Image 1 (cartoon, rainbow, N blue to C red):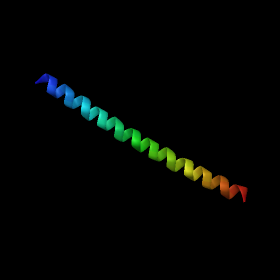
Image 2: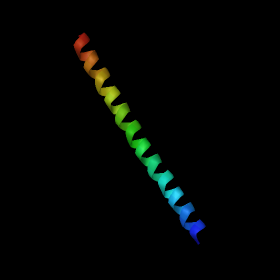
Image 3: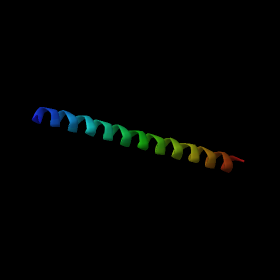
Amino acid sequence: MWNLITHFLTFAGGMSAGVVLMCLLQAGKQADEQMEELDRRNME
């Protein structure tokens, strides 16, 4: 029984880490796009 609980917690922790990582990557991508847009405006 303890083995089942441990595996479930490991799986849930991995899923949570994956979701957090995806959110961070999306936020970083969006920030990069905003910086590029600001650089283009300043060049004009």
